[in-house]
Image (cartoon, rainbow, N blue to C red; front, side, top):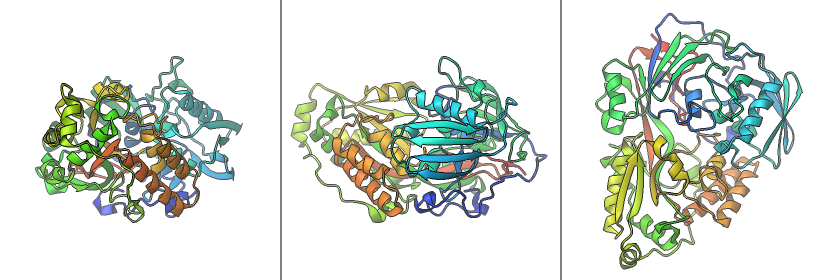
Length: 507
């Protein structure tokens, strides 16, 4: 999953994810080729920190993108769980796993021990709200000796090694965890780059951590700027103020030199999320009317400039097994007619939210507003930066949200995404969906160990979710990353969890 010369990921099938402890072709010792003499990397990121880079927030992926912190496991290019802070593991029984730790140290000079892992995982389990990756599992950690940790789950979790690769379950030193529940990765990770300064929501300084167990990074450091405006990120790359700019808006992509524009097949799906718990869309008939009114294919060219595919469901072309196992959706509510919509919405306004961090979302909201109003809805948009609206979204203060979601972000396994976003107790359930059939279908998928049957049950759960019209898939995105011509070794990751590693440097 590196720049084009190294090849892109060909598939994200689940089969290799469950195959074993060590990924074929991946060395247990990910030693870099030595420190490079090039300069510091300047990186423009899109979404400013929500909680000072706490791993329990959406900031978690910053820690993995910049190689600051690590979990017990990581995901290789095929989506297989491979060693990270754990050098090996084995499954003792259906609910018990044993992990052997490698010799490593934290950036504050303390040593990685089994108790360090227990402390970190205990804090993650006690966090409020829980990290999304723990939505459907209760995890208990026990130190057997200095280098051995036993993890136990209440119910069988066949993809636990994948779960532990989540950026939200990064292992930080004891210094990271404050008594008030705050978590700081500044100087407390184990990765090849150490955060030495975090300046609010605008900048961060990272230096190479020479004590990294995997060897010295080739770049001496990273200077991060958060630039929420996509055009400004693209301009920073074009103007030479940034070496790497993520999430280039599709309107800007073709303005970049061909050598600096890198298209990435993405597991990101953009959808219209409908609030089922209150307001207009508590009515299933109105949800069905909204679903019939919107046409995601209209966004492919007009908004995404061709860098997208019309949505077929929650999972798109970058999840290659999904299409063959897709289940027909049945049992949907009958859609309200245009006359019924006008009657039900008279004097009421549909509150449609979109966020500015991805330039396409406000544009898509405008197209959807026109489609919904044609069907009889009265629509008012609320467009802001994501960090300003997340709490209101989770509290159900909007009727609908134009949403861009990386479906395999947290574990690389689709069940985790379904559990966090659509179960009754899901911690990222923006739709407020509470549906017994959906909960049952997701539980069935979560408990399945056989790869083929797990995939089939995931798609059965997808059909149950789509039946409710709590979510209307619109398009499957293709990500565009901007990389200056004199930079090599940038990771092009369909899951958007990785960006810079040991080998990333200026030529």
